[in-house]
Image 1 (tube, rainbow, N blue to C red):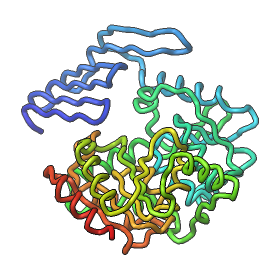
Image 2 (spheres, rainbow, N blue to C red):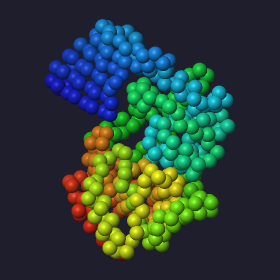
Image 3 (cartoon, rainbow, N blue to C red):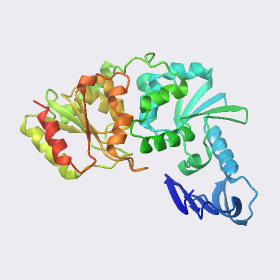
Image 4 (cartoon, one colour):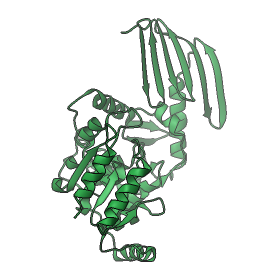
Length: 363
């Protein structure tokens, strides 16, 4: 223990003062707890329950606020799912983790004795539906409305039973937090894919077939590209956005594009104007892929295209780019052909060197 210790993890703040004599826990927007000699003697809380705002200032509070918020979350999930679904899988992870779930879905469902007809998948993102359509179209998925802070605060385990429903959580908060902490403090971390495989006891080689777009999907996408004037026979797919890491400068992308065009390539820059399925089909016609490390990039591995992927520090816990690359390198993902993967770490503002190296590798 230290005289003064502070730890900040996403929305949570932990402070210990005088070797733990006084401790503070704060979860942004929901609660502030103050302890003396490990006894909770003051709390400020603010949250909605059944549509009613509960805002309290309490001395020696006795209520279990986390349990109350958890019950509210579970009830909201259940209310948004058809009554015939006995089992609900709540996806609280990002696009990359949901991609892995799709690859190992049969094993996941066998592990928990789930069937397609009595299980409903829910999440907070619409593009999860796209992934299920690509790999497991028989799955029932629905984007639901749920307060992310409430979910992060109170839903920590991987299974709950509520109102005669079974609610499975993919992937549980405790696993993610412990893993991120290990990555930040270890020079030789377990790779993320291996950690997920071990968590669910997935057999690495038993994965779903790769996505294959039908002729109608491809025709619609090709018509869009023809209207844009893109040279479909010689272009590079560029994905400059990522939610969880620091971005590169606009100057980097402008210079990269100019240099590649000088070599005779057209450039397609991915955007929200295209669904992830449309973007994947477009990337399948490219001569190569350049992008920031993201969950979306993982879904392109099966295309077997040269991939130039850039790592920067993580926004959430400021994990250095080199450690992030070790823990999440694409070379250990399913469908990967290692000879097609080129990874770059922008830890010390070396954008110019990265750009030059990428351009050099395109003939």
